[in-house]
Amino acid sequence: MQAKYESAMVFSVADGDEAVKALTEKFDALIRENGVIENVDDWGKRRLAYPINDELDGYYVFTTFTAEPTFPAELKRVAGITDGVLRAMVIKK
Image (tube, rainbow, N blue to C red):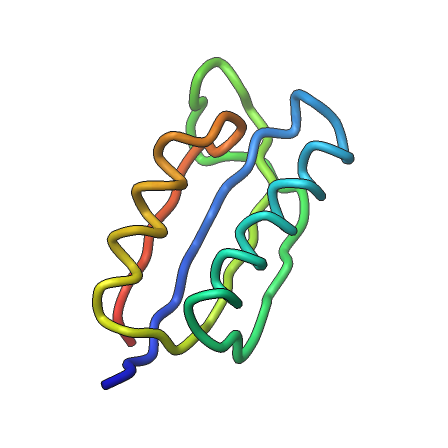
């Protein structure tokens, strides 16, 4: 039984635009392998509310998708061990 989820990810901009693009594509592909993407809201580069790892800016991407209930935990795990991901959150809508 699939459910609807939303992920919010903030990527580091310290490594440049190519690194951000690679991270965006990596997580889009991971979600597509395990579910169906309904919407991607790319906010782009924004000032962080507070410094994270001595960085003041981050690249924000919000993705709405449907997937099996076990997938969000895997998505959050992969985001947690991926270099360049400053913050990641997955919620059930």
